Image (tube, rainbow, N blue to C red; front, top):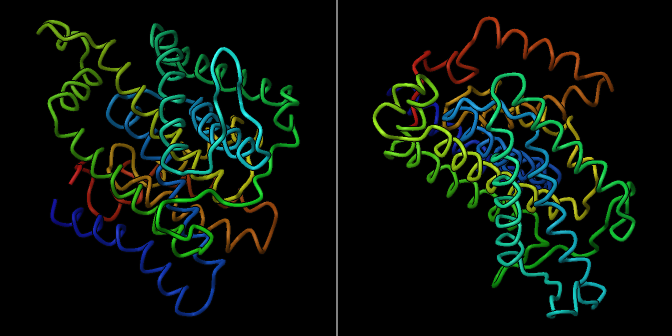
Length: 327
């Protein structure tokens, strides 16, 4: 427990220290990489709530990631073109305000997760994986055939959205915003895991029949976890689209779902800071190995295989021990 706490503190400080060092060395690109790692870690934390606590192997979390991204893109696009999203039966206008965009992204993703979860959680195992994948691909092909917002070419946002009192165009400021959101969600996820709901959800993952025998409904527990998971992943999608100032159907792709799952597996399923470790390692490999070869995913695949075979607790488990903790 003490060793894992030290590892968690190191991981928590890793991204801001990297960003501050890059700022001191006048390397804005490194700050952008740290920001990307923080946002992808946030998406991984979202999946980890469903996968690590609930045992729900979802291969369609790109659906929520993409919905969050398109929520940002649509609102910002209408704001920059000064055209309303809807005029009848009531007026809905675009906005460039990050807090409003985040709220919309969370609500839209949570509602989608409620619908998808209510249907897919009636299955289990490989059937659950395939149903969640199917929903993600449905949204992927829908976004391709949606010409009003760019179709397969995507949608560009020319100026980054604003946050009250802050200059979001400054790389370090935008990193601070993304990291603050990640820190708050990590705090929430840690408390959730230790709360009665989190303990009941973990028990349902281990033995659903016993949980049901004491009067709790495993289906409801998993559905609530799935909705929370989708909402967090949608928030990450909105931030990711804001970072790139671009949103495209690739955010809905099954490749994106796979990458989010890779973050969690690399860092450690069920480990609070597992997605942070996994996302940081993924970005590091992409930056270092991607400059050497376009086939750098081969090395990532080999590393993932080694983790699955010899480090069942992920990178954190390899360093801190096999016992799962959420401190």
